[in-house]
Length: 328
Ligand SMILES: C[S@@+](CC[C@H](N)C(=O)[O-])C[C@H]1O[C@@H](n2cnc3c(N)ncnc32)[C@H](O)[C@@H]1O
Image 1 (cartoon, helix red, strand yellow):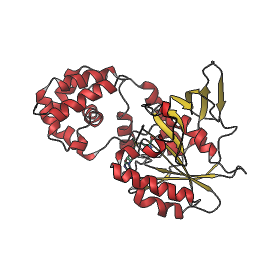
Image 2 (cartoon, rainbow, N blue to C red):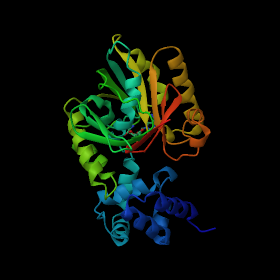
Image 3 (cartoon, protein in one colour):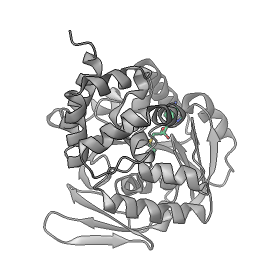
Image 4 (spheres, helix red, strand yellow):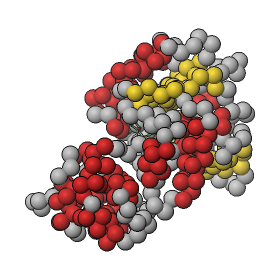
């Protein structure tokens, strides 16, 4: 067995997944062929060896991106102590507001019939940028080239297929807040610079969207609590005002939990929904919440897209950053 087989496997796999970034593909292939760099990465705790985090830290310390593998290599070899410190101190908390274009139809389904306001409680909120669905203009494009738009603000667009229940109006939001292991403060320049640094090199559109989203949230910073989502959620729900309809939602979060903990979370949410304490909108990778994935038609169960769920039932397949949505 190669001495750094785990590192090689993880970076080879990332080279296959990172097709959206030719730079990261080149960097990953570079690491796969470079035992000296593998040795450095292998000194990190396993959860910190992930390419996204190592590359973000190297960029933070000057590796030009997009740029050749030689630039990454030089920064890792000459500034390893600083890069390592950043890797250990920070994490990947990508906050992608593009996901709102896929979340909004599901959130609208949770609106009370009288049009009363929702309370949005996001678990794994990062900087809470997705807590402002009422501050964007949505453009949903149908396959036949027609489109439907709604709302005011920075534009979020999404290609849709199937009978998406596009809402007539953006739901009213009466309360917004969230929980995260490490909430990021939208008014903290350093934290926002790190968040921006996590966007892949060639994705200027995502960087622009993030800058606009930070501006939206910074105008009225959301309430974010530090803690574990399973442990804190029931208490947080207890603290909501009485005149709002609570929706607990999350996207790209539950994969961070150990499999047994994911099941605990599913049980917790099912119980809260059954007790009428909240509605539940989930948007997670395929099989992260297997009971939800299994509620899809069998023909869709091998999809690698995210699964959008309402109250524990799959309603759509979505692109991980909100670019597409197929209603089931
Ligand atoms: C990839 S980010 C997604 C952020 C946001 N939901 C979005 O869609 O843009 C995942 C977030 O989940 C948080 N997280 C992971 N495990 C958690 C836990 N057990 N409790 C609370 N937050 C957690 C991380 O700190 C991180 O901010």
